[in-house]
Image (cartoon, rainbow, N blue to C red; front, side, top):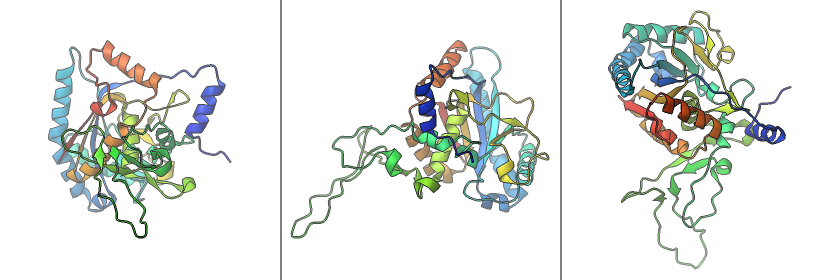
Length: 322
């Protein structure tokens, strides 16, 4: 039986071969995500879906206009997408869910070009995508290490230094409490401690922020496995989708005329309840070492189009919380 491919396999293959050529991907100027919903939202029916897209439509139009204004010439290439949570909860069927989404979006004048399933951010075919991103995590150096294991071992990632924990000792007076400290602090700390996964190593449950970070990297065209892009969109129609989530490709292209799925920048319109999750996503992405070849390709292409592209990954990600 074939086992999942991990980042360790990637490294071994790269070390054992003369060179791994990183293949580039087609890029839009903007990847526009039209929302993210939980199972309960879908269970409320078509009215809830139509409400979602009515709230999204004005912000989508604004993002499109601003992207066009940022181009020195030509028309912007903009693709839309929607991520369905089939990782933490399984409900209905891909065929029914996507059909309902497409119809509700159309009522607000919106087209969903690509639909993806969240479990595809954990594993895409034989590629253990989440572990590849995990193995590219780099812990920020902090003053006065407290012995805490790195994020790749502990499953927790911070943006600074936790409060030191002192073991209790008999007949001793406990030392004064010390607050946590953010690394890049400005006047006052905003300390975050993000759980990346739970469960044993052989049966991990990846956290929502971690999978959302993988999703952002995928949309930005920055993920590779042995130099190849991962989970290329597969053409399909809502009616042609399978009835089992496991049989649905990680990313399906619903619109044959859509601009490329990957993009220089991403923009996501979500409910304000997702603000803590997306704050954690930005913390994670700030600690991911981007593949140099993939990153260089994207930067060179943006420069050739004279399209402004921030150096840091998190600078390429925009949101509206509604």
